[in-house]
Length: 317
Image (tube, rainbow, N blue to C red; front, side, top):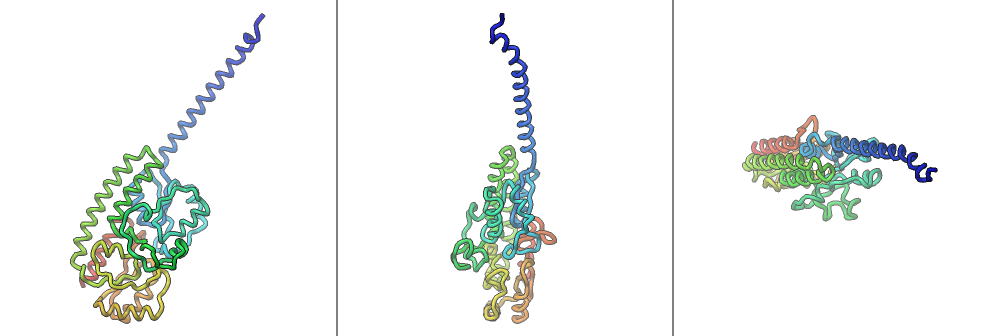
């Protein structure tokens, strides 16, 4: 007579084989999923074009970058579309400038509060310049607009951009460790290019450092500080809002006193104020592009070269 253990032992054998086979299949499936995940590009959503280009250059084929701000639009007046919420929910990383893209922060809080965020102004060292006024300041800080808020246009200083490149590489490596060496190598090469660009622009703009520089709004504060341009006045203190007639009249007088012969408006903002001041003061108007994107400059390096060349040529005449 067989004991109970003898009679049950053969019955457990097939189940053990099936369990082992099932475990092997599960492990193989997990390995395949992990392998596929490690080869699929990191999905990165970026608020504005300059940072999107730098993220693309650091990430290479390891990333897929989507820019939210359409070409030609101003980040100061942009309202994201409902369809863009889906992009944020699926993003591996969201890159923001800070200061001027609070609309993206609010959208993230609503649709993807746990998304990985990289806010450049929070992670990169720079010497803050007081901002004249930005729509997001009051909502974000509770302060009156322009009070105690740093000017957010930090990307127009290539040295700040170079420091941001290193941070971007670190952030991508945290999401995709297998690509860490590639991110670091691309970031190093890009930092060298930015250093060369900085020297190039410094030489280009050196002859016009003493000429009065009058931009449309305060996007150019860091650029002017980097290259020692004499920024004497700003035509529109609050981006996206036309200044009062009194402010325009006072600005015309101030510009006349500086001896400026040219003022610079911007592709993304209405040029009405610039035209009024130009007509009142007998000045020329030259259009700059602080953000880029088609049909303007598509790469960050070309963006800075484009604007520096326009400024140098206009101030020399």
